[in-house]
Image (cartoon, rainbow, N blue to C red; front, side, top):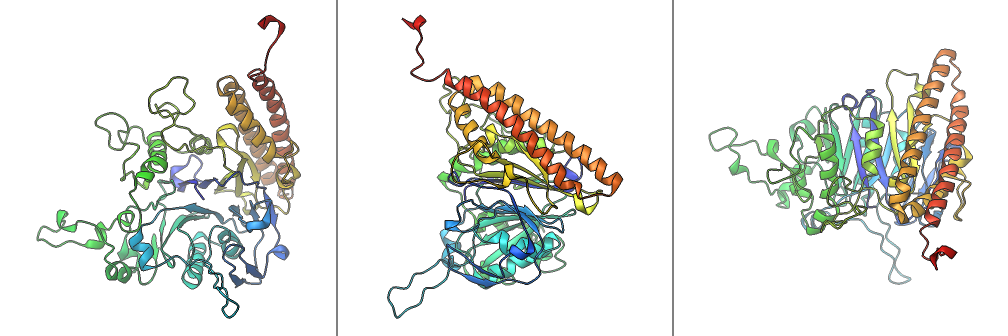
Length: 501
């Protein structure tokens, strides 16, 4: 799934929370936000795409989920926070290369060729991963290890990046071929940028095979690299010791070994990393001009960087909504720059759902987890915060049908985005006001209910809070949809009047 992921460690954010966020960019997938109760979690899971059956533990935790409304291709839970305040988003489809995929092929479903043969199940993939992992882990590290075990046992049919977080740690796991993997703990002071490419650009093998403080990987990863001649690093150019010897593992660049550097990357992937990095660290690096450290098509844009200032929810939303505004590549610019629309925007039309899972320190467990959610194209929608540790989600977010309707947040957002896009210049101010109103009022309600619940100890108010948040979002969305419809109607091609004669 062509998505964009942003991860932030606790020392990189304004409130010391951990954040994992991702746009789920399917093909106009109809999505909803629900809570999965332990009694509703399957004990035998069967994947629709790979026809794989897996027995699951009998003690799942409650968790939130953003499944597809149409189950014909599986659950596709996308993201969520469980009752232990572990968050997960899965997956960011990433790139690989033929050398890796030949050495460890992807595990794809094989239908039997005749009646004498049996079908061969495939591995796990984006359809499955949240359901198989999130209900069974109480820390982010546990999540990495459970997912790693599943990958080693069943394999995967696609290359993916997965984020898992808790109050203290954020981890990023990238699959390597069909069964191999590596994972890094995001540095507390850093932000990670993942735009559909194998991202990690450094990895400490000594830690991975030693203390495992911040690095984990397949037990045979060293042999896998060596036996298949995957290492592309020019070690002789980096004589760190001074006597012709070098610690190869200290200079290993996983992106060069397991990833890609294609022409398509330079149009579809790296420009997104460039825009995000340019926003987060405008003073630490040069992003424009002849002497730029990084350009939109650079292959060495850092996987993680320390932002020049603390990062907020508003920053992440802005970045996941962006379309290269302020650059010549903006498809909405009113003049032809010669490169307008050249690169794939971060905010695109076919996004189903975007979430930011935030685990907040210093608060009671019952209210630590906030899931910020918006549906449709992020350029025209806004994050709505909801408390995650609840037994139900308001109908405005959870009761979504396959038929378009203004009675739910998903379809109202989709309709508003399609109309505003067609009359962008005239609707932009309406959208800006709407986004500011929803985020401001959403934050006000969260602050209000945080205070009430902390002071009273009555955490059943989380569901009352969510209903208030959903009611606010519905009021703001309906009012803005009415205004956008009126403005867009003025631009219809059959808009004649008597004065036109």
